[in-house]
Image (cartoon, rainbow, N blue to C red; front, top):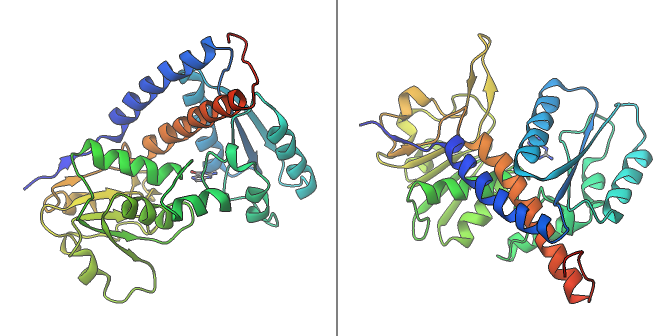
Length: 295
Ligand code: GUN
């Protein structure tokens, strides 16, 4: 058996083209969605991620405002930049690339972002709304995974979904989105005993542990839908995920590749959240009786 591939790259292109139409509609009304991105320090991988996000904004008609600050910047300076973006009506989304280098307090920085502009979905207000089953701006990677499941024809309702990894950015919000879609969810992590006994029960398996090649064929139920959120570079320069692709593709019913799976969808959903934040800002302004240029 050979798994169907869930092509995140193609799906992301489709999402971006749908968004470009929404951006054009907003721009015609005098509002161009804007995303502000902050990079602190000189981590090469973070710099590449930020560059890809800015490029995707430009291709979709979203205005980007990027700043690159040295790791020597003070936390006060960093918070002052976020306050300025919070107050700027041209900025609809704010993203601080993580991880922040030490000694920054990432949680404090995230909490300083206006929740209406928190396109990463990491602010406690957005995390809380997700917990209540009312996501406004869900985290980008889990939101992208939900779109991938939909594109694969996989409805989570009534299915057993197993998530490996309990990170704030992926595992926890992923579990909440699957629960909101009526899946029975098991959230596993590094202290879970006999992981394979649980993963073998999964109709949907989300690998977000951050451990290269963790998911092997014997851990997968035949026919399961497997989404690989991991991203690792091998010593010989290849990019691979948390799933042993060459093994698991013979067991799974559908499988997302790395690269070309979740990665492009994460960026597409960041753009999606930025457009959504801009649309919500327009609606809120209308509710207050504020007119846009074309009203
Ligand atoms: N670092 C790696 N992925 C992400 C992401 O999705 N958002 C932010 N803010 N930082 C990241």
